[in-house]
Length: 156
Image (cartoon, rainbow, N blue to C red; front, side, top):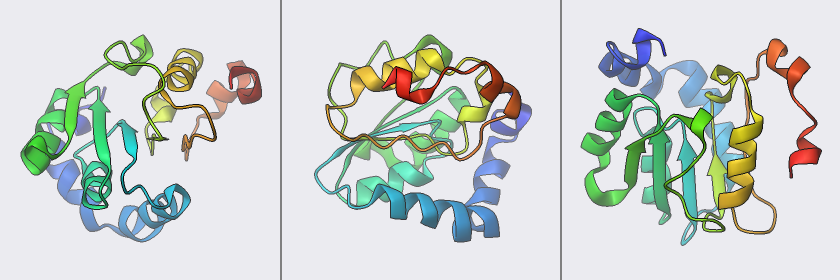
């Protein structure tokens, strides 16, 4: 994990809040895809400083936010207090703290490209999301990852 998410976590959080890419492109696009989350259980993977967690909580969702960086988790907790559940977890080790079939929506914006092997995470997302049409948002994936990744349809 780079220093951007640890040593410089505060500066990172400040930078993504209103910059053109995040505030005007990526975030509105993701929110439009997710749709209404009122009274839904949302899992925010790679939550960073809690921007999405805050937006979903304000819409009336019950949010669990997870990030590898303890500094990002601390920022999210400072930002939202008890409004969301937030903790640090290495997603390459799955979601051991999460119960099966509990989430209506799973979001994972701008994080998935950091994982070498996507199969464990996809398997865990499939386990924790309720039966139906889950949303799992993957905006960026390295081409090297795509070469070694089995078809998503084989996982879902």
